[in-house]
Length: 137
Image (cartoon, rainbow, N blue to C red; front, side, top):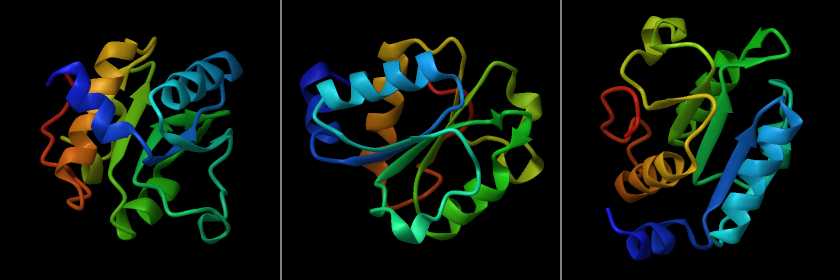
């Protein structure tokens, strides 16, 4: 995917950011805003009132937030048809069976891969799984 296409796919899109490490969250927010996306968050907890937020076009979810797994929130987003990209300092084995094969990126996050993975999710929406088969490229 080329840079112009990625920019076009991200511009004006709402991206939910859920990350408990302040520096990483800020880096993600700044990158997404620089690319023209509207950021929802960042949030550092799993008990987000989704109804009080604009509907995201996609979500970036850190797998563990202050020791709590994010999968209950992922379930709610999945039910709403929101494409999800997981971020983790672990490997894919920490993903429960329901999310095996879903897109994920290792931390520290390579920003180029993040942009490409998000653009891929958005390009394939409304399919919440976005046809991914594992670690995002």
